[in-house]
Image (cartoon, one colour):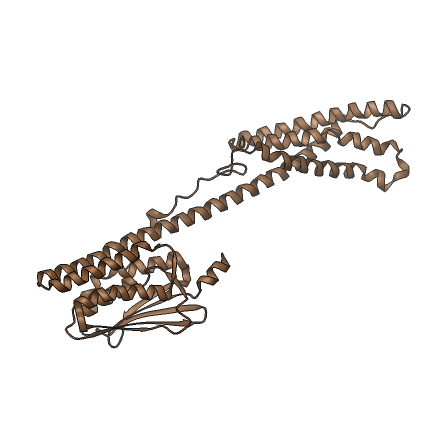
Length: 390
């Protein structure tokens, strides 16, 4: 009936190419010009937060030893951090503007920007403090030193740049994760479509070949009846979405419609038994998942036999799994002869199980004492459960 070692079809062509390697600040899909406006608010918020942080740091010595410093120190620290309100947002936007630059020029430009901000802030700090002390405390000399101030502000602006870089890096990671998820979803849909297109010719070839045989044997009435049932089956199957899940009851109805077609050809030689306990009919399964397995049973067990062959389809629940079995008692059929032509059906089912369910979707196919059996294992879930999970 089927080659249990049939290899999986090569689906590599349907997988997305690996994303190109991007730098820390150059996430795919980010467009600095397009998102300038969206960066104004976070730039302002982060700048205010760092300005407040700087004021607390500069004011710490005054708070620890308040008697060592004159009251003007509180106002002087306010003047010292005022340039932050302009320079922090400017540095933030400069960092974002360099998102798409090559790595070395980007970091070089950011280093220059940090140094420029530090020097400009130190110069403004000295000017503001001199003006403040001249107006409020002309007898006191402002504590200003350009070199020390530049060193302090270099570290402060470098820390600010590092925080902004981490923010943009996290945004890049989120974009990459979203793009990867979208690529995986597209690849899965492409795989399912490819497998579905593989299944259609397989089924049609078998059925049309059977109709042709009936016509050659001048069994025209049976051929006409089989064609009518095929038309009804195709009308129903083509209306269904092969990428969506259906209930087990719907899947079994589709299989019965297919077997009705085959019964026209085989008559009493085809015996069908279905065992689906109450409560399992609402279980969710992939559309047309079992059809190729039933086709194999018909083609490699019923067709060569001259005596009645039973195809038994059963369902049971095993913990969190749904176990479906398609078994036949066509033991008289030499399976080694049938095996070469059965790879499409089994490989198709295996591939769909892997795409849809990962490691939890399995297919076991092997001879039994009186025939052959295919056992499909997949997660047990219902339509209501799927909707709640989504």
